Length: 280
Image 1 (cartoon, rainbow, N blue to C red):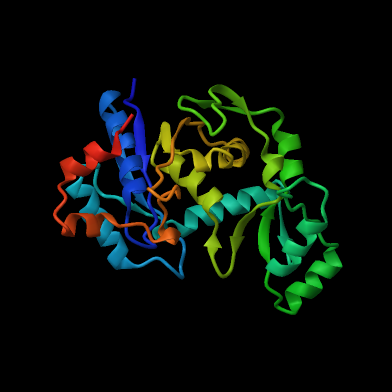
Image 2 (tube, rainbow, N blue to C red):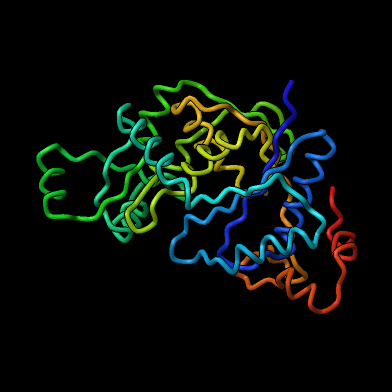
């Protein structure tokens, strides 16, 4: 039997912080405990914010924490053909469509939809002639997943949660991808979107166990659906708690949380930080 494969997949859109350290160490230790393999993926598909200097900093931070990985690490920016092939397969199955609505129009449509406090967006396919006209006018569009059709064809799916979801969910969890609405899978300005890239690359890297924060628990449903439609293997998921600072806010780049680089520069050792993180 092949050893289990774990991965850590940060985005080089800023420096890592305590939350990243907690997730990376949790995953790395899980791989060690299972006599498994640990792989690194740099999710640099955000063309506007990804920077080579942040990629280099990620490698330095992980090494400082004592984490090693199987070389070479994977760069999503090199994986365009694989994502294009996946999109082509979904298009051939009739599971994606071109959405010409702007972000503002989508936001307005969501506020008018009776889907609860956080409405999901469900679009509609344009008639062939209208779609051809807009393409002829070079109007921008996004490829969206037809979530209802994909769910209908896939039937009832589930995923295995070996950790704990935000509501304490464990075991075999039925998926409900309709909660996400018709998500964007690709767009000219961003290229491929996270949901598609992550399932394609998890399969490519032979990942058997996905360890990540519970903020991504809801995303698992639509990713499981994409795996089913693309014929990709289903990993086991383990979602862990999110770290929060003294102010009660979760550590995040957007909150300008103290970076690992800054922590290191003020003389804190990796061992001190690891003890502070109180890993499970």
